[in-house]
Image (cartoon, rainbow, N blue to C red; front, side):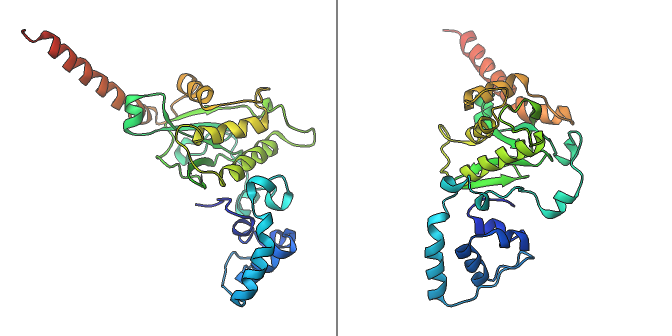
Length: 264
């Protein structure tokens, strides 16, 4: 897993000298004491007293949910350096599980079998990498918690109404998604009230997608259920999503008919 926004030290240590230079003084000194280097390696160093002293100085500014608007806690890009240099995909690539500007969905095993509109949801950045809220304080990158997506819903970044004139649609999309990642990396997962759907909803709210400033899990669940498509290969993804529900329904109908047809 890459890009879990636990704190700015965890993230910036692997980004190189520019990221280190942008760090505030206490964080930079703690990074050096820990042995942070431009190649992402880390060897502990410094006395325990010195580490504790500098950590106390840095601690008040480590709350990502509070300081997410500050540039040093919200890097301009959440891509690896090699990814920044490469060309972004111009279309969906199902074989590589790359879905630019898409909401993605995967079934939740027995829960989806009983309630076919319930599943696990994530959202993709401009290069197609999947981000999902997987559990307490955990954001997954390109590795969905319940397997590869079986349904996708492609969105149009041009419909993000909160974008400034000097931002490209892709840059604004990634910025809003990254901000949602920062927020949910500091949140406890609640399966009923604050879950993977909520993580996607906050990203869309930041974008003001389709001019809406409020999104919720019910809106997103219904949207994907009725409008989502099965990416290639279609049949295996359809079967994984729908066959357990169909089989369960047939079993219920069979036993119901069997019970009604028995002699009294």
